Length: 377
Image (cartoon, rainbow, N blue to C red; front, side):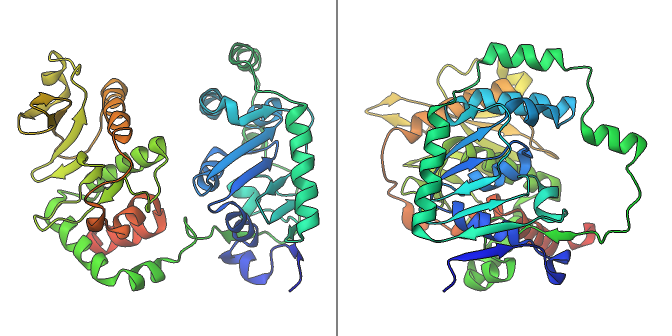
């Protein structure tokens, strides 16, 4: 087998097929410790690939990264860098685009943005030659040691200093670009977790049908259940749980619900009539109940040795599932506490991987909801 392959858009990907760049990048990062070098990054695409990795580190030119985006996106990038500062090093003038896994690597011209991966004429090299991968790992390690995390205060000051400057895209959208007769590229990303929607339905045919039946009974509308999946996705992302984690259980119950359990306790559960239950810490404030739409505090949950350890709070959310940042902060606090209580759930045998797919795989979720809410497609 050829251990070095060129990566570029062929006729198929140029006309809407899967991007060969996305194929090799997702193959490298999946369940791997991955090292990434790139100055120009789209948050949506970057978050898409790092969620597949076991562990990741990034070296980037933070100045170039921020300047290439509009003001709203700059704030998102700043928040991301601040939150993940230990995993991100700033290296001024770095321009390489490299993704390095344990046994595979990619070097190319494409930025880690959806446009760079799916719409630009790019060229890259996919490497499975052990010696070259090791050399790239050493190269990355040397750059990492020569750089450091960005200071949060310095980052705030930098963003403030460029606040009046537009991004390249804003300039382009305002005045346009130079005329060109070149052929355009229009590829698509590989399915979110590398599994086609058809294969998901085929592999989990019975579970898929039960999930369809459950959502038809449970959800008042498409937006409501999509909001639920988004909230569950938020949970998966801040806990970093994978579907096969022994602490995580996503079930389809006989009563027609799709709760999420961590270890032995519910942490999120959609209920009938536009209600949703969340685990909350004991210090969740009583005065917030009316404002937050609380309809029930269940006294039968979360005791150990007759001592209450958490609250089970049911909220009314008839048309949309939306919560304030402060309320979600309480919820996340309680979830993380449950995550630390044990290393395995006694209910893992009830886990349904199809629910995880509906939460994390946007392509499958769309297909699922299109099937259920076909009148609204």
